[in-house]
Image (tube, rainbow, N blue to C red; front, side):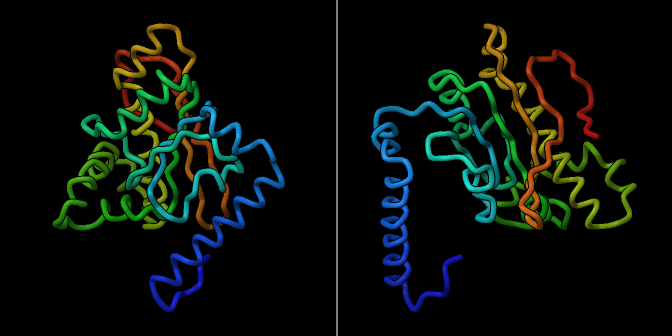
Length: 217
């Protein structure tokens, strides 16, 4: 982590110095990396994750620049009116030819936690409204969990499962599957407490006309 800086100039200087060190290290370890990256990108995965600064996709998966096409927002949401997200998915699937999409949430997510509390104002409230809908859909299961932390963790998992479902309903994926593309959508949750990723096993690889209630183990 970056230590406390005396002023903004110190912070900028530190980041630029670290970038230089990283560039030199990468060129020593993989001499052809930047040459190849400058020519094209051909990522293996599309990552839809949370904007939380503690969940850096490349680092927690041990992947290199160029391996992942990444979109992040608060609480890793798939909202069908979000043209930013839909454009990323469209480009990833149709231009880059990506066949594996990962939706990764994380335990301790502030957006999910906010959805468990009282209503509040501001723009963020509109975004959190989508997570409140997830909680409403799974009200019976969640209210049956007495422990607050366990209930919080479960809503994180259910939110990921619902976003996998939402992504499977987009026209981008529906059309891709209709044309025989072997696209798979995976639902994961990252643990801030141990750095490990949990596979929720809510993978979708085709379009279901009436899939029913989203369920995870």
